[in-house]
Length: 423
Ligand SMILES: *Cc1c(COP(=O)(O)O)cnc(C)c1O
Image 1 (tube, rainbow, N blue to C red):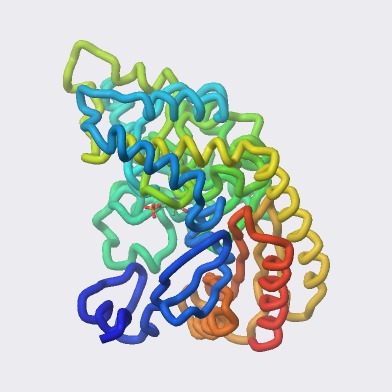
Image 2: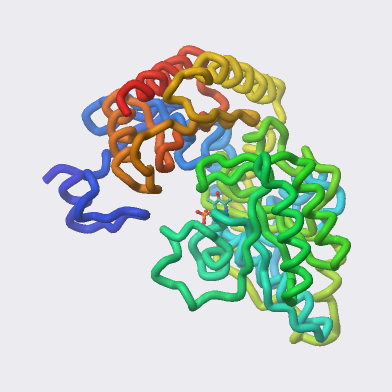
């Protein structure tokens, strides 16, 4: 039996209708921006394996840090215990964040980092004797697949089967060009009509919605409206964090500061599953009490896993190097040049770039649904040509590892250009 046949016998894949999906590709090895399957076929990973891998596959620097940590302290429970890697992550990360971020809570993945933020928002008011049950979120938001994160997510594909089983979430329009005022006005009226605890958003770029982008000035305005009304703000930077937007964090483009931030994905350079949620001192103080019931009764077995912390420390060190910072601007320049190259193509309906993120919305005759036929055709075309890109409906986006070379980038651009001809 081949690996793929054995897989079909035993395994259940994410976001996959097994009856109609093509069998998965068995990847045997990775290096830099490249992956090789079991038959030796080469693939360019143009989406950094779901946005987690900025420093390239099998990165030696991170691997060595992990190995070193594994041979001194691989894990210890974080209830009643602490360790140096966790403290060092805080000491390294907090100075990179907006200066109101003072406390860190560790978890395992992006969804749990959001789950923690939402629970903290709800309990923060509960601890003050106030009931606030509503969370505000954007249309087409994606915040993860656990229950509160899923409730905040607006992409119906992910949430259809669970409708009516969620915490209260009210949606507002994303302030994309032309819709800014509608977004501000809806936020004001939602806050007036509901007992709102928090507003959660993907700052500047909605990843899973298809790299939908909006201006920092608009987000500043939305945060101001929340602040004025004592509604907490949660920046879900699980996708945008650690350089993707050209700055360390999308929040670095803002003048306002969120009350909480959610980080995961590139946190450990795509090596160990880890996430964290960060908070203002004020939020932490809202749980600080002689009353045990006011504590945050939330935790995960692998919270602050030292090996994950070591991987995060090595990743943050890599991100700060001149070489990696140069890569961020190099990729941005290349994206902008490519945008010029195709933006007048009759099949390129819209294009957008922020930092290392590029997206083109392809003009199609038929309606392009999230996992529709156009998407499948494009995906298969890219795979046949040895490039991993996962279009969202008719939107093709590129989010390369920062180590992708210019020649590799050019290969990706050429294949995207060719794709415009096949749809
Ligand atoms: C991927 C993602 C999540 C969920 O992270 P998981 O690690 O898949 O649970 C949450 N928010 C955003 C913005 C994401 O892109």
